[in-house]
Length: 440
Image (cartoon, rainbow, N blue to C red; front, side):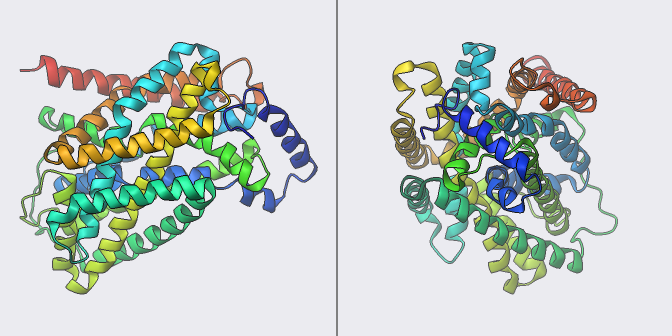
């Protein structure tokens, strides 16, 4: 089945699946078949936002920003839920819903994806390469390691396609969760490194506002990733022969999202316990910061712990790189097929071409602009946040569209949370504009 003919051919398949599920509503087998897209989104989330921004938040400000991080996760929750719920309820992807609301919305999504996608792929791959170098290799070989990781991830997607991506991601998430929680337990057992009378800097100043925007832009992930899980649902159906019901899609989403939130808190805690108040000057960036995190952890807990924290960090970034190399090209290809009738039957070829072009472009960025990589990552994180109100609003319109069954549309509490999220995004974006362009 062509994955992007979901507006026509996938709908009958979805209706058949729903009828079959109605006969056995409690089927655990069907639930296990449905679980996958939400876990993949968690893999994409637990990367730059967690290892870099969450850890820096804890390292610089202790527990001060934990409440803001949890609030951001809560306010983004509905807009990610809508992606999978819409697809389960209608049998078409979230991006097809964008087109129903107006083709301009697809162009907006495509522009944001192009603007941030390649930079994000290059950034997370570069962090993976830097961490891999921590296994005793020369740091000057980081660009070569990065290119190798990009090639391996592209080969996994091109040769193994969704099935291999799904299996690898679940294995990596299991390894990541175990190693991170063990590391966190050791850090709590050791206790914080900050002296009892240590008073850290305030996180609530205009000077820190740009950092807050970068933190929230990728916390737990950019809103445009809500389209990925929607598209992955069709790939999951091809693999298992089962299209998820709204209940199953919701459970899958909750599993992935809760995992992402728990890992965000864990990395804030790691930053607070092993770096906050240590007297060490923080390296202002992901590559150096990630290596510093490993070094400080081993210095405070013991040299024997270095492989543990290094493995947790590397598995985090590798899983993020793998899912980004699938997710960004997949959504680009889906957008192209929706915008042109001549492309509508050629999704697979366009998807493969987008993977190759994205990886080549990411390699160019890594090899030629490595010194500016962190500035590019900051730019991508800021773009992700300031575009959040736009994409969140589109998602809200889509899930309330006339083609969505009334019982699957948001209830009063979810609507209220959605409106609160939109207001929060708008106020934070206005604050960023004020700090950057107006305030002297």
